[in-house]
Length: 357
Image 1 (cartoon, rainbow, N blue to C red):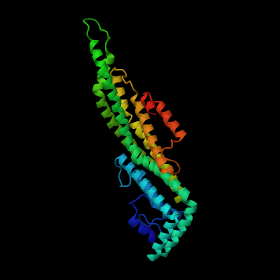
Image 2 (image 1 turned 135 degrees about the horizontal axis):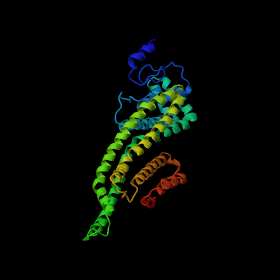
Image 3 (image 1 turned 135 degrees about the vertical axis):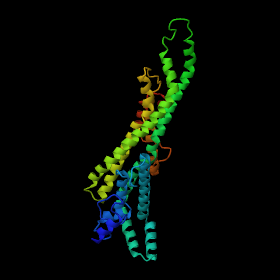
Image 4 (image 1 turned 180 degrees about the vertical axis):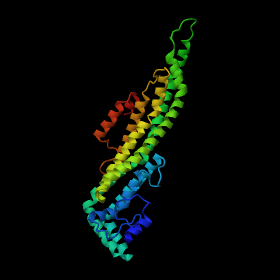
């Protein structure tokens, strides 16, 4: 009862309940009968409180008790995942090295803490068996963290810049076509050489009003992403709680990696769907008032292909850098990944991506 009173007085209502034996925020009872794997995960800071932190980022209320800008919350989750993965890999590296273990043991003995020396020796022995799975789990958590912290916030920028590039292409075309279009009006009677010149007026309309429509599309894209991300936050936390309700610390940690990866991919897909408004609005509005599609490049397909190729190339470079101990910097990328990226670029309407790749 004393432990329960301590938990209610210090933790209840402050952080998300983790369903574990917590005395107060970040503290675990020493005599809880934890097994070897539980103690190992807690020594590496992969404990119940870490699971509560991840759950807090994806629960409806968020870590600060209220839901804020989705990009800010997602970047906070990604940065926390990156920091946790790097700290865990650093701790595992120290425990797995003989020099690090001896140093920790000596410092523990000099400070009058023989239990620390014993724990360092036990951790060094356990790392020979669990080092590879732990490092693999850290990489599995590091890649989604990098994606959600740095790649997703850049998707609107990439799609916006390629939409701007498409508008510049249209302006350059109009510079060449406008004098000929004006000469076609030089007739004394009838409809002239050009007929009704509908395509010329459509091009003029797009050159003038497309930047405004693109800006409205960017604002609407943020609104759609903001609204649907709020809905995901409201529902995903409930689903996560249902999935993790019957697990223990090791299985829940592995499950959390899978769920966070799913959470990241949902937001990547949502970002592409939402910010397509940058190209959809300038295409649909002229069609509604009778002007045909004057795009010489499918900006919608081109921007999505460019964003996908850029994101895939970035993640592939990160993966090669992190796991590049057995591969040199000049070694070509994996054939399978190269084929996937090249295939994605071949689907683009514009030939620029094909020339580059």
